[in-house]
Image 1 (cartoon, rainbow, N blue to C red):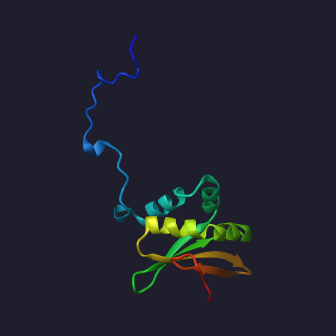
Image 2: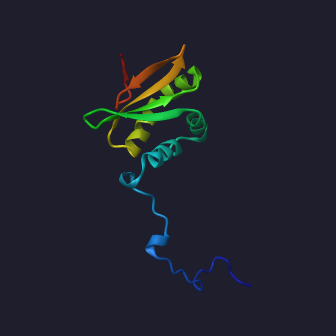
Image 3: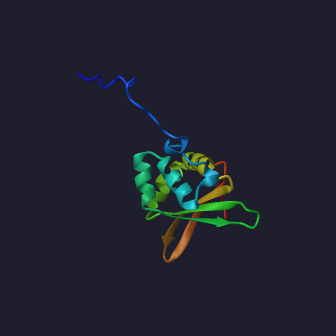
Length: 124
């Protein structure tokens, strides 16, 4: 009988390229960064974020704002409670995103709640 935990007889000839190494954020596309941003949340919040639309608006100085268009007011309220987690995940994925906005469409217009890099709400 073969011992399934005995790896001494096995040949492991892997090249460095064959092993899985996560990409550095500098090597990622914006879509890959957004995917990583969503994966950093737990399952419940990740499901909520999957219902949202995202865009990044860049200012002339190179900094940006991540805008999250939420499907309803409940989603906005739930994500507003997680603003520290959102800020931490933004910092993990992007170096130049300094603000994020939670948006909802009301009466054909977008209503924004914008938060700073420290998680404080910025009044318009």
